[in-house]
Length: 290
Ligand code: PLP
Image (cartoon, rainbow, N blue to C red):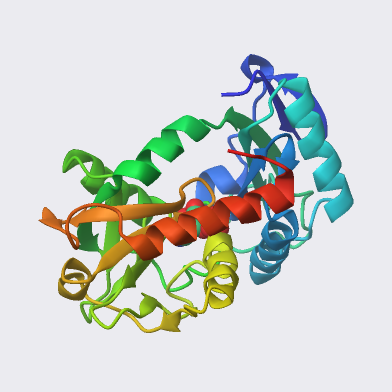
């Protein structure tokens, strides 16, 4: 965790930072967040994250507390003040502090904004990319607006905890029809029996992942344009390859689903190629070289 955090316009030592118990984020999870990855001191896909933040805020009718340029200045300051080169910055904006009442306050308070940074371990990610990870299936218990990146994450928390208890890295959430929606903090992909790269279409039941978006372009350039078609756990278990994608896991191979090996149980060629291509994207964006 970073030494210095940002809270409502101030950079403070973490031990001295606090938020009100009447913050609507705390009481109603009435707020949104983003996680941006900085490598080599530069943000990855910054504008895509800011576009999604704008959409999340608009969906909840929360006014952006500052412009994009100001967000970037504060984030750069967070990196500098914490002496970080490779880090994630967590950014949270809530509706603010008011007397407790479910409805939006008639006179909107100033949105509350918090940022915290965390050192990012590239070596640990590389290790997972080489060995692959296990996932388990778990029911999707979430609400009907998973496209908004809100701090309301209890369904995701329970899915991740189920994975942790099963010795897996990620929980793939399954909808009432038996199709995988996404991971608790990543999107879910397979290379199916026909060699098609498949992931679920964007709708209100999944988060529009930034890495999903970038991977779509990268894969299309590599002549393996993704097909937006949902898949079941059984299809994923019998797929040639599977992987997860997110800001912090980049593209990470899935080599086991509910204890069943995917393919020969090692990262497959399509996934390995996409990992290389994604690192080239990282190099172009941030100058970070493996
Ligand atoms: N889906 C969920 C539910 C997530 O929480 C995340 C990231 O935290 C993702 C997908 C991946 O999104 P991104 O690529 O923007 O990190």
